[in-house]
Length: 358
Image (cartoon, rainbow, N blue to C red):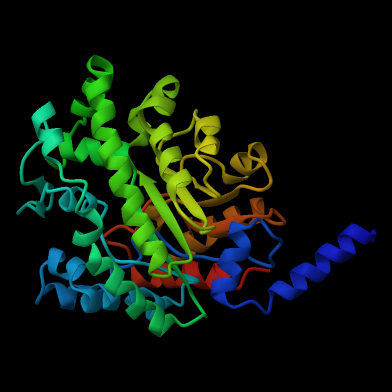
């Protein structure tokens, strides 16, 4: 065994003694670990019976905007499944609401915005000067979560990417096909840029607020990034994420999740993200191989598996773990959020498999 292997083996031995928070931060820094940390996008909320009990008494918006309730929902999956990280229970559209465009969930479950952003006048009326004040409920919820997590478990904050937010805001909510933001990008880039500038400032303030409240990392969700062609992703989305990351004060790791963004790795790397989260349609080891060794990867089990059987979950999770064995900078996660109909025994099987992986 050569000297470098001996040093690395000693480093891995040391990591077996790390708590969950330390393990998560070590993974973000691409240091060698005996196993990856694990948390799940949308781990808090709809799949949990304790959450559904709360929903019988409170609306979704009440849960998001009441610090004590948001903290409780954030903590529920960590108590039940012992994830290595908690993520604040919130919604990407709190930024739109803080700008003055309220939202709600319709009777059929889709998102409905109070109005649709359609014109220059609509964009100018978005109030970017009140975002931090209007999002203080997030700042009050996070210390409540930290008080229970202590220093043992990592805490993650998040916001939506400007491109993804613009799509919901211009469509007026959920849509079968998102076309209005793309149309504005191609036909009036100057006005498109004005909207994105406002959103970039608002998202930066939202994330900075969470960093100041003590989160260990933040994630930017570009869930609709895959709508864009490879040659325009940089100009329509990545450049604004870059501005957000460069505008954040401090050394908090930033994770960027560009769902369906498969041909724009240079643009994603150019954002300055410390971690790139990958959807389930790619082989994670191939992504790891093409990225610099100081950029971590997160992912990427197919979320659908959580609706099947524990045996199927274990088998597929082991495939991901085996292909990433020995790789530095891996945070185990899903390739998107936990489905509403996920089975509790499947989630438990996943967490146990990753945390016991040798």
